[in-house]
Length: 325
Image (cartoon, rainbow, N blue to C red):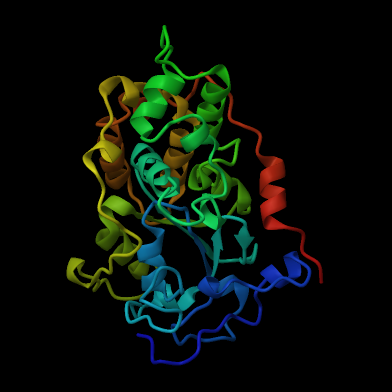
């Protein structure tokens, strides 16, 4: 684990070459003592999808993100081949991976559960002095449209409601675009599965850790790399969590139906990632689909959606940047 040394980044970090004069954020740096001379084709890229359990896995991999009380304290990294080979990360608009990486590691979660967590995470705390600074950069969904729970957004913003209880046409448009990831007003829905999936090379090798099966999947990836499957549930760190109110996690049956319909394309990408994962066998894929059926039965079974897959090519291009050597 972390030996008290200074956090570092690999010398082959691509981010400064994608953004002129840019400095890699501190939380992208590593505290795990690794082989700094490992070539890109031996490395794993950590695809840190927000609100899927990535902060927990990021700490286990040795990245400085939501780990410990300060930037130099992290005793939660897990000595392993997976941590040792995961040299770079991709999170939101910071792409620090090589397109030659041996593996792309996704941490994924039931899409409806991730949407609920993402909505609550981005919700501004109006008691703060500057509630809309930095993380809370956009108040359109919460304050302007008065959507303070995902259930409310679904029932008033996505379901056709007659009378004065429904949202305005503008707010309905915002609600749908937020869940589709085509408008940046819920940060971790904007950076969704589709965004991360389309950002990596088309022929990339994918490995997956499912939020619902962290220990089993971590050990499977570790074994795939030639390491030992010795992670236990007791050794898992817990990061970036807070106590939730009952109304924050409640979803009515009507809300679930319309949310799943709107998230249909996101669910299809989630299924594609699972299908392509080198460490997920047929039985494990079926297991995840059975779990998905409990929240989004129609979308779990079908392979097409009423809406076309959004074109996010410009968003991906902007986030990755262009390599300048």
